[in-house]
Image (cartoon, rainbow, N blue to C red; front, side):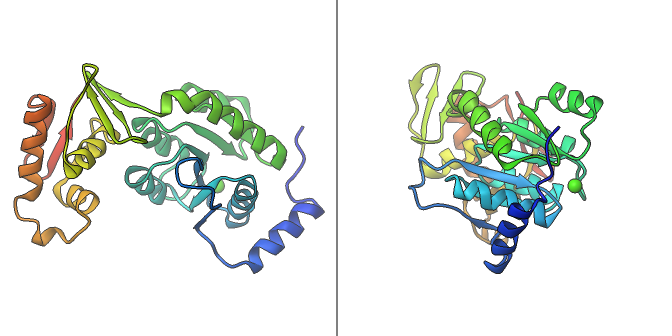
Length: 251
Ligand code: CA
């Protein structure tokens, strides 16, 4: 069995971290592309901070979501290489958050105090990559994080749907194997649809994510860009208008 993270050494580390202040984001300065970004979804602040600090020391860039809703928002707005996901969470539980992670193809390792086999099997069946029972040792966590990242790295470099492949690292889009020229905003829009397959996206959310401004000044900007993107990629039948709401990429 694993030992508790609450032994003397970790408590000391935790104490040091607390003195460092409440850092929800941070990490190393190794250069954007080479750093793996990890989202820690955990409502127990001390555990979240402990994990974050140890992962940051190992060279990962981490963010913490203290509840399921915040996690779902972060997952739709930002890119992560891996999510460490608690099961019992406020607002949305870990299984629900897993659905968001799966829709954007981010690998998940479940973290849970519920060490029993049924929960473990459920998490893995639903598509989690791995499962760690709390309490766990930091060394075990690091080893599992590394293994999952290595296993998923290749698949993670590309987001696919229909005949379209998106490579976020190089901002390249291929359709049927051929490169497609998109404007910046068209690319951002496509990426947002691809990361939210089959999910209704509000015009407001699209505007705020892609253009980053106040929707009340947007006019027909979103509609015009969606029309152009649909035409360019032949997605007329797949990007569906939802009356009074916005759009959905149906695949
Ligand atoms: Ca919890």
